[in-house]
Length: 423
Image (cartoon, rainbow, N blue to C red; front, side):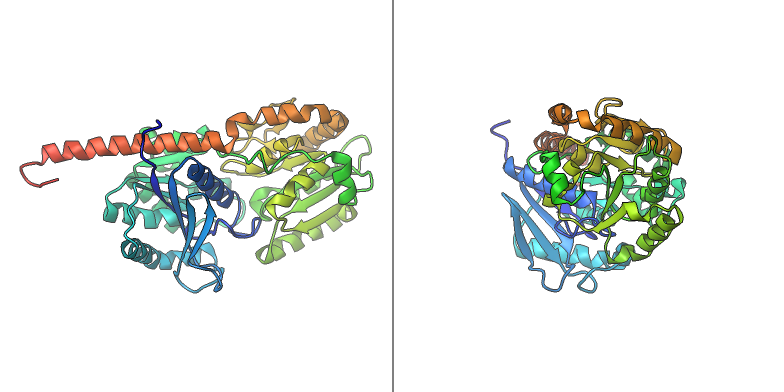
């Protein structure tokens, strides 16, 4: 409504800096979500402060990262990159320093929006101190990752913290209906507290680049190309994609471009390189390392197909980005894939990441790649519901609904206990 006051939101991203290097161990889709959403909310006139811990000794306390949006660094533990679990003991300090900063700068927030279980731990305490609603988005769930059983097992500390937050926060934002089901199944979450709002894509940044020009700039020399973008970890199923490469039909020998991975991914990259040698496809695979987000459209556009072979995704931003660049996607039925990909039109869905199944759909996508040019606009049009203005509008409406509900609850409590307390 035009006469409504702007919202003042404290957004928490304790373990991961939203402007960190994408594709490293603890910086991925969540960081994209936090920064893009905050900026879009800022454009709508809302005031957003994103709080994170100092990840670099040279970090300034405050960065202006968008209209009405600030990124605020707080000291919590040693300055620099540390494993996300190592952040946990410093969360009390993070919460206290945030409260001290708020008080010294005479700030007031209408609500808290926490991201991931670590931030939610701090947000749970701030909601009590400030007596404001607490909204949470977990992005991934520890119990679900353990149920998948791939990669490192999540500690019970995480599971119990998530369960406690789910029972104490006022609203949970789930990116998909499947995530809402998981919240109920694994944590006993109240369905009434969960709202499904998908993630978004920046359609200004992600757009088609002329394919032949993109191929030439990347030195593909006429070769077909498959692209994977994301963190380099077992849960992403990259080894399954590499196995699928050996089953591609019609004598096709495309190149596989793997984007992502930092220093902490070195051991997994070495494992994958060894596997490539064993599969005799090492000459067709390139590990491109970290690529800045503005440079990704060139890579997506040069590729014939983007593959998401993950065992588990909370949503799957990569699929949105690839389609926005006019490149079809082959993906397992994880995260929001079924809502993003139009099977047989903008890509293909596979039941799981079994290599033969992946190879079958990749072969189809490669055979159709010469005709994808005229589909690029249709692919982009299919993403209209996922534009950040739409997503930010939905989040803002949910914030206002939560504040209205919370205000009514407090008003009713005041009436109920008017003989005991004064509100």
